[in-house]
Picture: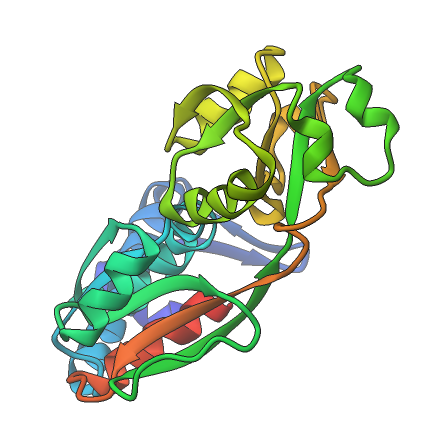
Length: 262
């Protein structure tokens, strides 16, 4: 109680009267320190509780860039607040490399996008992240394409194109170009921020996932417009955490995946 604390410290912390309870001058100096001590105690108890839990070991996680930018930082921050004793390594990689690393049990979690009916080898266990995205054509403001309600790939062949330089996009564009001829690629980058900035400057158009564009300032400020795009980008991607069937640290892995979902 406050009275016991005052007795232990040898100082009166609060003045009590019919008008209420107010801190004394000494109390004003000590109360912030008392709060710090209580917060440190809470943190210590949380750490001890975590050490006694089944959440232990370390995590090695590979992720595609979109998830690296959009959901991993927040999930990792919240996870580390609750399980500071767990060492977590996160790095960015291409989708096929991530699948290969999971098959070889080189990483604990692989974060990728998959099509709705896609399956994996029997070594791989998929865990849905309850998150999906479609694709959008992004164009500079006042582009002629922005007048369309839907854009087919054939319509963008005449426009300079900014390529998101990732294998997933290469594969989709190759299928289109094999049948329809090459796009006018003027710029390649694997940095989403650079790509969006380049389009906003009017240097070309591009195709990216809707998730990548969420809360983007160039979209919010009207410097870029996004439009529905046709084949071969007229489908959804479902984001998924992959693990190996022979994984260790089962509880730690499952716990981190729950943080990704939230």
